[in-house]
Amino acid sequence: MAGSEPVTSPDQRKPGHRRAGQIGAVLSALALLAMTQGNHEGNTENIWLIAGAVTLLAIVVGDVVLRRNGLRS
Image (cartoon, rainbow, N blue to C red; front, side):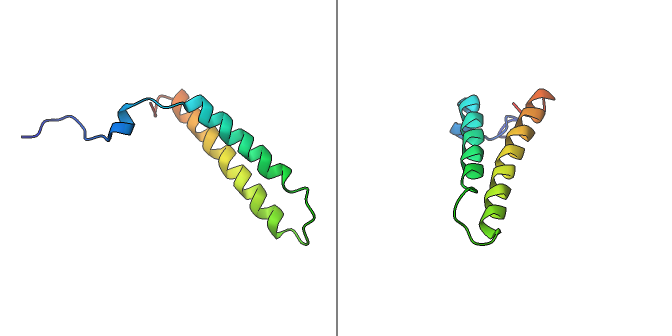
């Protein structure tokens, strides 16, 4: 029998730089929002830029909430 220890990859056992990732995601979202102030015709580009920024921010907020509730290590 193999044992009851879960199978994990090496990068799952090594702690990452979570805070740096969060800061990078927020800065990227701000950069995407800053790109909406361009010389675009129509709003298609703006919609995609805003959607990308909202997605990044939702990921960061979701990660913070999951960690606070102890559902993620």
